[in-house]
Image (cartoon, rainbow, N blue to C red; front, top):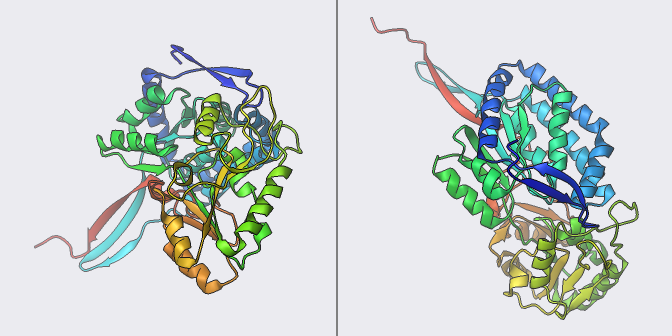
Length: 457
């Protein structure tokens, strides 16, 4: 690294500096991409069975270091230790899943007159992955694992606040036997390292997860080179609760409090049928009071801090202390703490009800009937995720088809599985990640026609 600047990594629970990392500049990014290009050519020539074997070995090495990775995630991101262990395990599982697709990445034979027509799925080259701070490990793997499996190299730019797990994963890849420089990490500020990565001509595709505002900038820069891009952006997901639902399960506060609400799939708009609104409010009030907020390294802790002072100030600006609502408690003193909150006095068209807050805050809104619920659910620029609770199967199907979102759960708060596709409508993004088609998103389709009629006599 050129070491023109450094990144101080803070523990969000204590505000202490836990590491200092050199920041990448344009020449560092260019050098990484050049090295990756050479490594990718050799990697693409590796037999599919051997490529799959190496990725499975990478998964094993990640599993062997799962506790180490989890502890890093606790310290740099403020995740609870239970969540962090799950995230490290998710990286392992995604590598295993991607490895299983290597030998199944097949083209097609298409019937045509006068010959044989076949398609080949060829790797793109070097893929740039820009990962966010809210889930540094798993989201980095969303792009990295399938890209590597499809025969590409990866240059990963982690968020400046959470580079440590990314750097360690790159070391573990080499330890597992992956070729040197095939998977590299360039920590740095978005406007320096991130923009350099997007602009780099040797990058064949960008995978970006982050805010909608920054995603628009990434898309603009990619357009200049007609460079493909996958965008996973913001969300303001509804939790639609009909009167016939199991209210206790439907109103689980961790549907919006997981990772202190720093989750684009968080169900931050709680839409409750008006006949059970008062009961729902009472259930939520009791649930918030019971949430254990504190040291994320403590096994008993259920919610940790926000990632940074900047994020804390953003949440405070959108949620004034005197705003009507239900509140739990949070620690005082050092750390970026915000109490679990449900706002009860917001109009459906208010900023808090329509825009992403990215903190442990939800808005409780009543609706009258099915049509009103659908209208409220769709009244946002976003369309990433959501939940729907009812015992009426016909209603569940009708509402699921009517809500404009890429990932919906009926009688569940589940959003992301590595074996099913994930992505959003509207300003929540472009493209899909994960699932059985993940590898094909990192390939070009080449069509070849072979004449069987022979040369003209």
